[in-house]
Picture 1 (cartoon, helix red, strand yellow):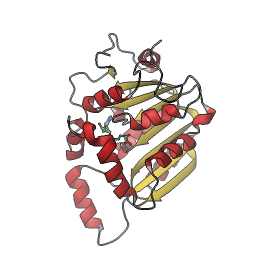
Picture 2: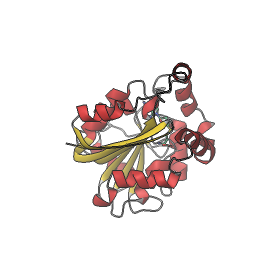
Picture 3: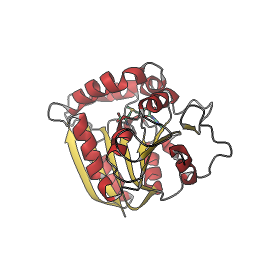
Picture 4: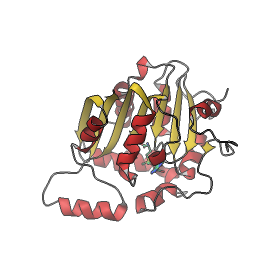
Length: 259
Ligand SMILES: C[S@@+](CC[C@H](N)C(=O)[O-])C[C@H]1O[C@@H](n2cnc3c(N)ncnc32)[C@H](O)[C@@H]1O
């Protein structure tokens, strides 16, 4: 069974005629995808996916995390650790807003059994890149033993059945969503009880004079700046326990375990 075929039983409802013509399962077809902020339009462009992993991600995330922030490898290690992937070697893991699959592949590399990591994103250009960068896109992942599959779908309306994932990762996505709280509801829904989640998202600096400038930039670009407690509160309200948080510059990692 290919990796994409392993995704079909997780879907609700499964598509009558699955479109896998571009190497990922396309559930949006001609739909343009989520709303048209400047940031969202960039994600859908043909240009950004080409420079995303080598330039955009290291430079912009590096600046946002600040000099004390983790390196990319440390981010990967944090995701695997907070999601406790070692405990679910054959598990199912979802990477929300997977972009070109950089985190998806890193998660798969951290799984030792015959697990499945599913990356979901709304951008066809990002997913084209993800497929091209993933060795054997319909088979085993690049480094680890886990399968890797990609789905084109909306993170705010996850197309999966309830309680099918052992872990969900969402790095660099939540601040782009029109309604991140609905997306968190969906992530909670698709997690198994005891499943873990980890987010990497923005953090609003609490500096009085900088505030209005950040708010204007956020308005212009469509990038939401989350308060330091917003995500922990949202997870607590949805019954998550064992919350963890680490803040670096304008970014924060937040994780928890579903009740
Ligand atoms: C900055 S990239 C993050 C890639 C990767 N997770 C990382 O950490 O480097 C953000 C991705 O979110 C996707 N995205 C934004 N809104 C989305 C939505 N509503 N549903 C699915 N994907 C979305 C964009 O298409 C883009 O590929």
